[in-house]
Amino acid sequence: MAGEPAGRPRAAALSAVAANPIQSLQSSYDVLNYIVKHILGIDPSIIISLSIFLAAGSTAFRYLSAYLSHYARQYFISSVRIFEEKDLILYHDIMRYVTENHLKGKV
Image (cartoon, rainbow, N blue to C red; front, side):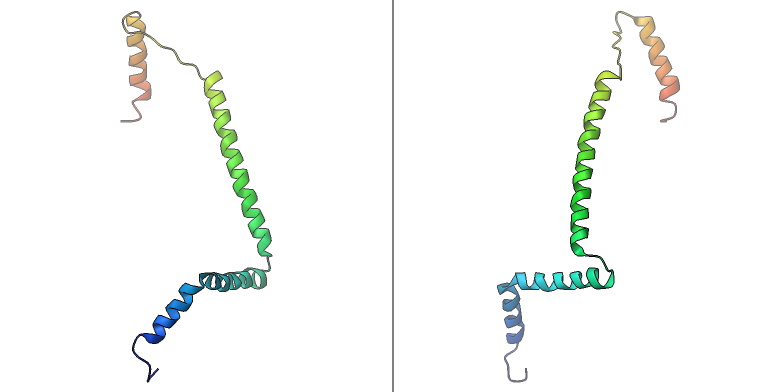
């Protein structure tokens, strides 16, 4: 290093890493594989398979819950439309009830 130009070893090291980024990923994978396999005593393929299974289960649950929620809203939740100009007394009674009971806790 004493006879080399300034910045030369660093540039060579950077070009070596840039030339083969897969090798740097392989070394990090080897370290993680060693930690999981030898220190924790778990086979890494089990962790990968379990994570794929959990992701698939989560996605299936999300679709199923969206379908059931849509079904429940369509068939079990009712709504009533009251026109203000036709049923004025009923409209005011309902608005009073909603104001007194439902909106009281939100203020």
